[in-house]
Image 1 (cartoon, helix red, strand yellow):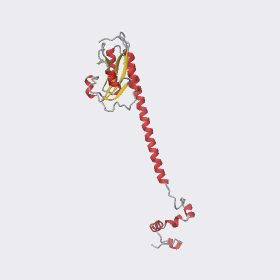
Image 2 (image 1 turned 90 degrees about the horizontal axis):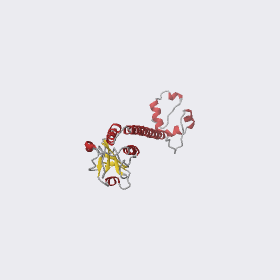
Image 3 (image 1 turned 180 degrees about the vertical axis):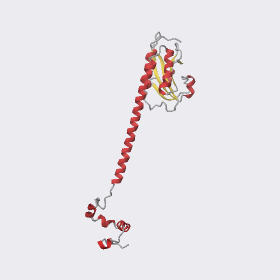
Image 4 (image 1 turned 30 degrees about the horizontal axis):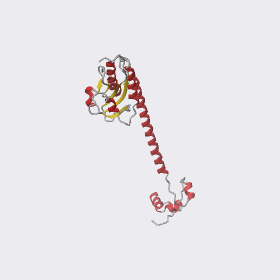
Length: 233
C-alpha cells in the first residue's frame, strides 16, 4: 500500500475498512495531528510525549477498591467472631455461677470450656500445702511462679511437658492458657497461689500474641466463686 491514502469521494467508494485501518495503524501521526477531526470523532488528543494512563489508573483503582472491600470484610468477620466469643464468655460465667461447691465449680469449668469454646477442657489447680478440693489439681509449692514467672499473670502458648492438668484429655492438649489466681479460701491462713487452666486441641489455639481478656474474665469468676465455700477434700 502507498504512503498516502486517497479518500476523495470517488476513490473512497472502493475502500474497505481493513485497508483504512491498516493505513491508520501505519500512519498514526496523520490522525493525531488532526485535532479537529479527533474532536469531531469524540476522541481525546494528548501531547506527543504524554502517555494516557487512564486504563491503567482505572485498573489500579479497582485493585484498591477490591483490597479495601476485602479488608472491610475481614474486619467485619473478626468483629462478629469477637462478639460471639464475648457472648459465649458471658453465658459461661452464668454457667459457673450455678455451681454450689468447689467440685461442681471444677466440673462446670471443664464442661463449659468444651461446650462453649470447643476446647479440650478446663481445670482448676492449687498449690499445696493445704486441702485440695475434690476435682481440683494439686500443685507443688512454687509451681505457679515456675510456670508463669514471679510476676507473671498468665501464659498463652504451647502445652508444658508434664503439666498434667486435663486428666484423660491431656494427650490431646497442644496449647494452653494459664491464668494466675490468689485464692482466699474460708478457713485458710492467707491466700494460696492457684491456676485456672484452659487446654486447646490446636497448636495455635492459644499463642503469646493473643489477648487474654476473655479467659481472664472467666478466671475472675472462678476466683470469686471459689472463695464462697470452705475447703473440703
